[in-house]
Length: 329
Image (cartoon, rainbow, N blue to C red; front, top):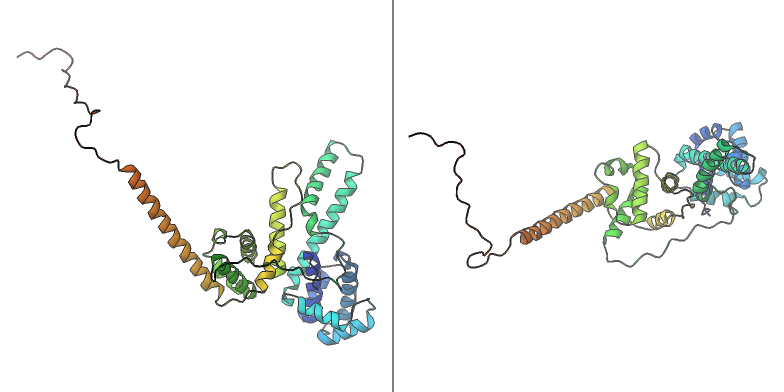
């Protein structure tokens, strides 16, 4: 716990929000149980919806105890429900999680329609439609699988071993900045004013920053789930809009593992302070590079002078007489 599937984690985060946050009840009107990809999550959403509809302020331990006693869902007891709550990044982001679940449900439906059209007799127009739907389905397939592992037994993916680096290396500073930003996303509005994606030197950190930048620009919540969903959407959209006739499904990105690494990173300074240092370092490096280039150009342009007369040097041509009749004295 939590499930390694991004959509599964969004479903579990929403269920945790409904268990804890009184205001999260508004999402009940936005989703149906069928929008959830796993049967257990569908059952739990139905049970929570029924309990909170009858008692809107029933939350926390009392709600968990009632669900464990009356829902009758195998494997779901008070301990599991407590773990579910603890695993959620931010239970105040229920609307964002609901949007992810709704989008994933739409894409599963799209995949089903594309598969149905592919097997049906069709003319030229139908073939074009099926090809277009098949392209989109292929691109988004890795992120919206309809079958997941058992939520009660799934484990979190392991983060890769960190590469050896000197203390305060560039990659370490970028990771420290992003770790503090994920923990304190209110800094995003300030950071996007002066940082650019090129500030980040590794593909994973750049993908995380680009996702944060997009979320901040739209005023959407920022946490590990919304960042990963935005990053995978951006990758899928780039693949779908490529000129490749039959694109391969995009390979899983390193964003999920990198976000786990960020969760294990202990920031020592605020993200804004680290961002200013990175920007200052880049400006100094850029100026130093320009000075070096200028000196090299000057050295190449100044040809060494030779002693004596240049043998290629020729005297100027004599002046030519004016055309036309000479004036009378």
